[in-house]
Image (cartoon, rainbow, N blue to C red; front, side):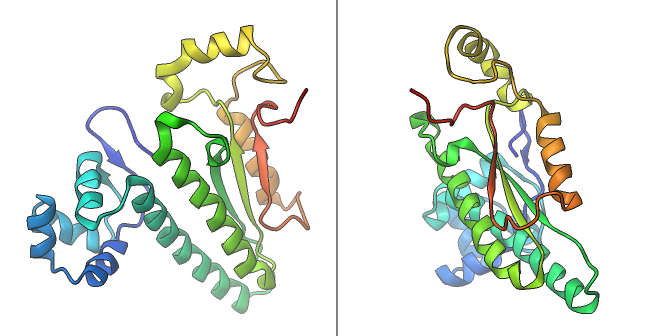
Length: 216
């Protein structure tokens, strides 16, 4: 998640950098020269550093010929793959193991926001990743879900509060005319984690106040 100010991307697995370098036939020195990033920073990323400044991310994507969304999908996928492999091993050794994977996505996966193209693409990629992992873990009875969130009041939406206040209050944008809250996501996640949603592998659950509901 991007934070305000001069901070970066948290909770991602950037060890994928090693594979990207190998695929491109680049050494750390080559990548350093192409991206304008010190070899020490690149080396840390290859050793699975989980945080990187946004300016570093943008330099890396250009060096590899990727977009920001493509880079984020790659590192998100690598993090989830490690979790999937661990869960498979747990289930093989203990049949009572009851873990699950919950990916928090966004309605931006299916609703076009022309000024936020990279974000939309990354969330669409997250949706497909959820389906792929659901298919992989189905035989082990480890469910994978996606929460597709709508307009949620967080730090990320603080800068557009007045815009959405007006849309929520004065238009028919939402069926339930209020901001979504982090607690709304948390309650749905808790139900998934408790096993209260059986027989629903790979399902995307919309927590969006009815924003995506088809209406006349």
